[in-house]
Length: 486
Image (cartoon, rainbow, N blue to C red; front, side):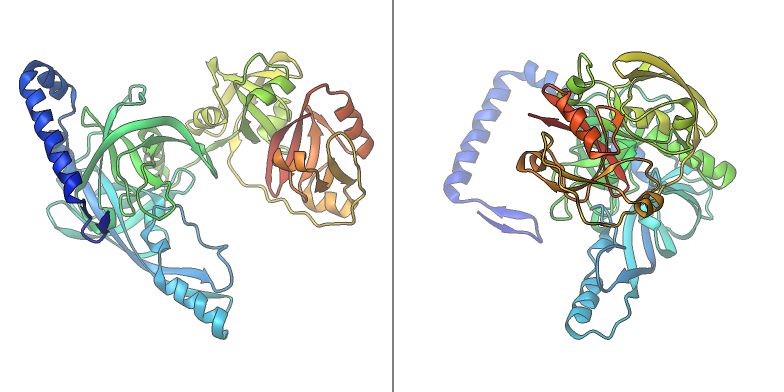
């Protein structure tokens, strides 16, 4: 098969085309023989044309002009989530290639930014919602309406955590999107539409189904994305995801792609999270988020066995931030959060999603599995903020034991710089430990919920376990439990 990519045309061999034509004739004949059945199928499909005609006037095209800082030595400052057209910048690649071949450039240079995105009119006086990453690095933002009028926009505020920004143009009597006031529970398989400006083609409509709900993505644990197979490409970011009732249920934000283009995996911010950010920005100029002060991971069967749970449910606490809300309430690493305010928790993403709608200062009750028994923890939530951690290497002390790890204690300076009260450096790993996901340079902080500070403690904890242990490991700033079987 030969594919002319620019036109999107696939040339199929004649024999195949003939077979397809015969199949089409057979299908038409079957349809004529079963008019009632076909009518039933047709009546169950959404009226995409009517929904698109009603919603498209409230969707805008966004053009961004500005500059961004680019490293000439590495990719540390580039945040490519697959949804921004400016991340495929040939000038950036040219600058880095020039630097590598000839030198003579500073460590960082400023490059022009030109990007396209989409937005949603949420108020008739010109208030527009979009994704925050669409307008990052913007010096000038141009809004183009469905009726082709253009306006310069100013930013009222942004919420990078949720990836939502609010823009304002000087216009009145604009069409406003219909937003789901009290969204019904989303169902996998429900039909959805996406409207936006992929690659700058404004007003493009695509359709698909909900593939998953409460999907957590790497680095975005606080956001329970809606996953769909509706075609979303660079330029769709900030546009609406719409249900069959013609109501906005999400804001398209990311795609998963090896190529930068659509591969069947699209992700949208649930509308209740986007609206919460918009309302706070319009009221106070900024969005605030609650923080429990923990790192979380999902349970699997091996971890459930290690923590003596009947089945792998809840959110496992990997780490508790020092002097944070969770620490003050008595929550500990190794606890498994099973419910919050009476609502059962399926996993880490589910708990993060519930907390994502809370306000700093809110009080919540957590039902926790603590060292083999249930308990209730009362927490008053903090404001969100990051915590940096760093480490330096030292000569290892080798421990060849049941864990298959080379371990050594941390020095006083390492403890001070990292802020870690107890733990061991993993200097080497056996093949079995490597297959479990452990790496040299990781820190071993605890085993089965108990902190370890000496090689002897680690050896005793490993020998006391019959089949599986849960190792609390830190890598960089992230902490995670790793099950290790033997």
